[in-house]
Length: 280
Length: 237
Image (cartoon, rainbow over all chains, first blue to last red; front, side):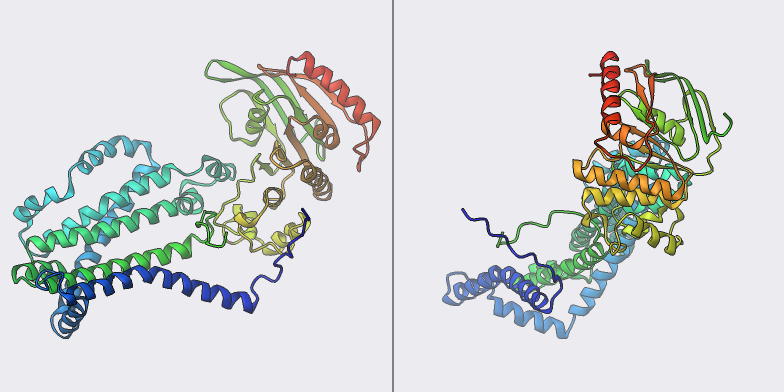
């Protein structure tokens, strides 16, 4: 075997490699689109041929028409109602969760007092709160927002506590060496070190918030995407149900994308495995 | 002598029921380099932590006239979310002295890496940053806990020379913990050979050689033989 040395890629951000990585990114995106497009085409054919009855599975083109139709009318009202509920519920639930996670994570005393109670509350399936919330708070906005807040609370709280407790003791010791005060220790070491775990919690909290939104709106609502779902079922319109599902998916993806973007920006320092590229 | 920077007397230091340190008396003069040589787990790191003030629960007394004491750990312990520059000025939060940090970066041979994140550094480079962070507070004494044990032999030699050069330039006394006999002898003015648990200072070897030293100096070889004999008697090896 001859040993042939590869030339080192010294000029890192050259314009050629930049365009190359751009076209690479597009190729990755196209790879991701391949499967959904294939499924849509196959469905369209199957429904057109008549293998599936269109009153059960409307053709994708029909759903697109329904969506366009809705977009001219009531869709925006439903979207804004749902979005407002999710954002409000998530803000309240995640905000409280961060406060309690910091408290329990940082203080053994707080953990002794609070953790058993939270562990107990956590073991209640969150949907079991629905009847109680309806009894106590009625069927208007408050009960829905509280339910969403409960749903978002626990993933954020759990991940937050774990993130703080997972911090490398050796890094904390550096701060102690410099005689950092408690607040300075939190600001300079504990908070940045816990950030990856906090983001994991916020993202799963957000996805649970959407889940509980649908649950709340399916049960009692006069507007919102969950209402659109149950309305579609009651009027035997699978195209409306599927249109609402698509809108929910888009909104869920959008909100998660925003959090993921923030995560990428704040956590660029992480030295993590990013998967292997196809060329390796 | 009343000139000493540090005077530490440990009568006894215990963890649970085991005594790790006993009857230790150690003085450090200005600009002096002293090594504590002994096996892993003999309590030499604990002694260093007592000097650094990280360990407060011991019987004895610590008299420090050194204004500033800094610590370099066995691992670099850099904050992964901060750049090299921010890590070096870590103790001053975000209003660190930029010119001083830039000078330190040059001195440890990392010119051009000011904005790099720790994940982009090799082990040896990260330890250079850790040394620069130790120097940032302009200490009189630098405590080092097996600082080069995680890097390869060649990097270690380079880092040892760098450390001596920096200590000389900034007039810093070094107190170093190591289990590497060659390292202890090459760097130090005095080598304290530690006993096995409970640790005492078994023997003090003065290395009367001027710097810069030659690693092949016959005196170093002689002293190495002596300290190996001593370590063997202490049932360390």
